[in-house]
Length: 180
Image 1 (cartoon, helix red, strand yellow):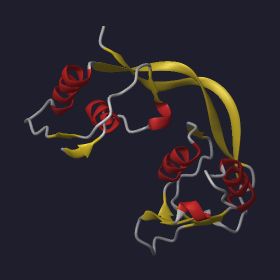
Image 2: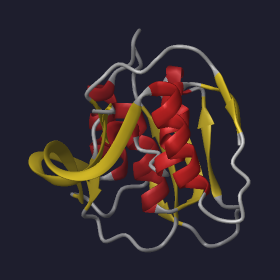
Image 3: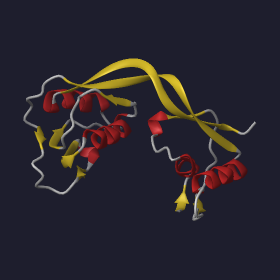
């Protein structure tokens, strides 16, 4: 169910693909806000896909494409701001006004951390840290008008010991296009 959803939101829900940095739009999506309900016993995603096809004239498919990405590696495992969680906190990430350049979390998995990080820097990330336990972290960087992804990347290295290594490799993408 969605209310006041954008066409992008509808497409993400229809294809169960909530990764904007891994979505390729080969056509413009219509403006506006839309409401939808899918409450069938089964086949909700398929029904919503059919509605997106009728209403927007769009279809999408998962496809492997060579893509510029960042590999996330541990360069320094002994940083003071990446702390193994002892299980004493509730799960989840907290954010202190991302525009201010402050980010902290308690009992966070590396996959949740990287999913949010990917949205912040707008580049797909691939985990090569081998971190399996949950952790707490505190991160600060100098924020400038319009964001500062380079400052954030440097803070990741300096404060959390995580290095972002650019490369190009095959990655599953959702390709959205006009119905032919």
